[in-house]
Image (cartoon, rainbow, N blue to C red; front, side, top):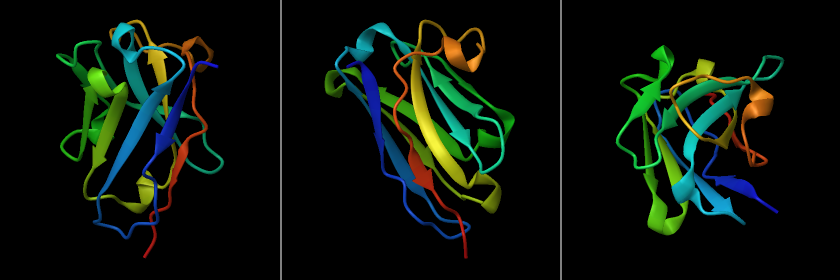
Amino acid sequence: QKQFVESGGALVQPGGSLRLSCAASGFSLEYYSVRWFRQAPGKEREGVVCISIDGGKTSYKDFAKGRFTISRDNAKNTAYLQMNNLQPADHGVYYCAATYSCRAYLSIPAYLNWGQGTPVPVSS
């Protein structure tokens, strides 16, 4: 089965940091761009940031700029999301999905190989 396996989520206090991992299972990450998403309770899933196949291009949503950093290691078949200065508004479940390009923000069903997500509770 082709899917991502997300990990690294944990309870964090406001101002804290986390590094999430997104491991590709059953497929090779080197052929895909990767987009991180998040979903807060009662809200729609939203995009956070996307990274191109070679890691040379990234595209961040405004709320992530300056605080979050996406990276990837194709040799390890894994993408990462470093999150700093986390705030209560960042509370939610974080997912990654595959896409062929970061140039367009697609509808949710168009993304591939979704994982189960990793929870990031932000609370004091």
